[in-house]
Length: 271
View 1 (cartoon, rainbow, N blue to C red):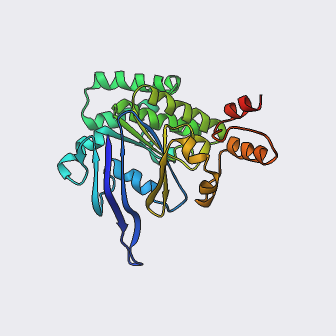
View 2 (cartoon, rainbow, N blue to C red; view 1 turned 180 degrees about the vertical axis):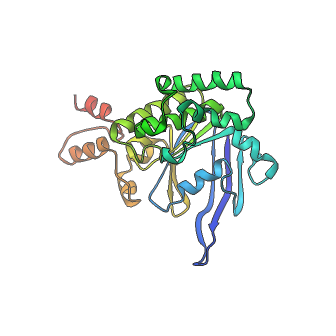
View 3 (spheres, one colour; view 1 turned 45 degrees about the vertical axis):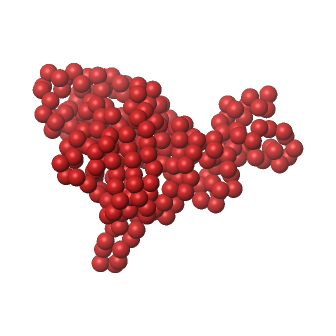
């Protein structure tokens, strides 16, 4: 669904050029759930904006469902294939009523009113917000607003949804709810790209890309990436809690499997 070939992006300013992406190459298959992690300034949000051509490559190429994003005639189709959800729901909501906001993207696509109504109702039902369709978004919690933003993307029926730190501004309960919703969308067959700085969230994906200084430095399953404690620590990340505890217990003589990743796995091994 997505292929990057030696992708490079340089921000130019009066203070000088800054290389945000430096020769990135990878591919993401149809139906994958891929997490992208990196410290601040690693290039992960810049990369996200290339997935639906909000940014265009300085050099190199990125293809979405076979379409070159640098070709202007492809932009409409690329953006119909890729939906974006950002970290601050207040910056994504544009209407004064919830169902009007979910309908906004569909209206821009020129969908007929009857189908808009059907899609809006289905999308709100998908995110468990049907009871709030006539509410003002300003009356909702942060987690509820983020659900509305996600409903707007679901209604457009894109093949790919990119989540750029969607839980960064939410409390723990809101984070859990959004992650559960993301996993449901993936189970329905959507391709999910999930950018986060919460390692427990990234561990729920099928695959993790690790970015450092504009490059992809690790690409593997969560188990492969997060159980390499020395490397993850070197890159400046927190290791998932279950991995930390398992490592401490091993140092105290407990004979535990090396690839423990989740709390359930740790509990089972201790039993």
